[in-house]
Amino acid sequence: MEEKYNKRLLENFQRIEVENMENKTFDRSNEKDSKQLKNIMDMLGGQYRKKPVVIRAFRNEARPINIQTLEGIMTANIGDWVIEGVNGEFYPCKPDVFEKTYEEVQEAKRKASLPPKPKDDGLSEANP
Image 1 (tube, rainbow, N blue to C red):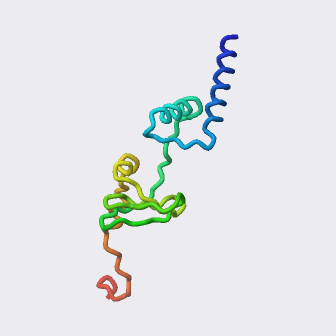
Image 2 (image 1 turned 180 degrees about the horizontal axis):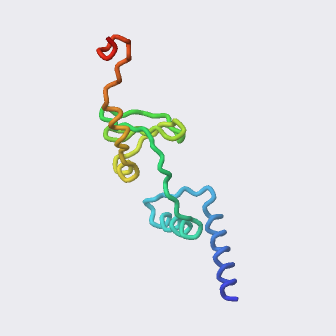
Image 3 (image 1 turned 90 degrees about the vertical axis):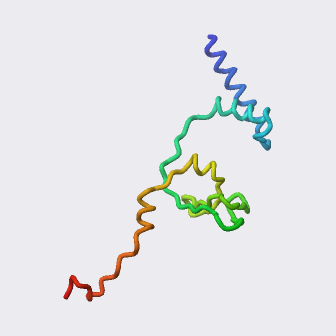
């Protein structure tokens, strides 16, 4: 009986929390907002692992670049990474987030550093 009551209580609490989220902007620097989101995550969230998808990226070493992203115009500052997403979209990524999220694919680096293969024009020494 108590288990059933606790389950109903939790379901009602979840409904109230989610209803209070409608049209709310959460500020991660606001302790109350962070706590509310963490509570909702604890109740409704699961754990997910990022799929091992290989992306293309470069480190912006020149000057700030404005990029039209799916969320609007964002700026990749010097030192930021510019990433091409899985759907061909581009977006900037701060260096600390990039380092925590991605690792270099060694095979791609090796292939990129190899000189292009010469075309077989039939005049090589192997074909006298």
